[in-house]
Length: 245
Image (tube, rainbow, N blue to C red; front, side):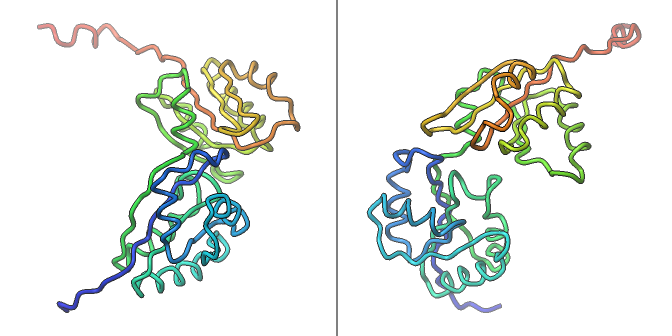
């Protein structure tokens, strides 16, 4: 085994605002300012954020599903040269239903770790104002569009705790219909356009939420929290007295 010490740079996983740019943390600004490069989902969106923060001339590395291997190799090379890289997405926390997992995994396999710079997350932002029970919940992220979608929904509907999903405005009505067919009496909470000008939070039945969201006229990604109705326990006579002798 080699005793040579390898000095690598640091990959910082930086959470960025969902919409309101004032939500950026002081530490995130400092890390972005000092990083040698920024790996980002969309270089145009990243440029807008950096200009707002007064950060100019930063090296940007495009990182998305279609160039993942190439981007990972570029970032790994910089880190192995001792340079620091900040990883961001268009909004929120990388990896959490956003690009980033592939890079974290690949760098880990090369012996390179990462440091989180926590901040905005659509998941925690929505749950912080959700009136449904959320001290224990399951996060399902985005559902498959086709293959495996039905079975995934059935698994979620069988849960006894709150579960949380992300959905686009193009499929929100379809998702409400699918969930209602499985758990019609569930309580539902929706958050959309969070921290933006037209942010909205709704709680009610599936029918009430459908009526409040005109089909084809809603914008922004959705966070949906669903709390299934309490299930009655099947108590048989034998079970009830099983501990008596």
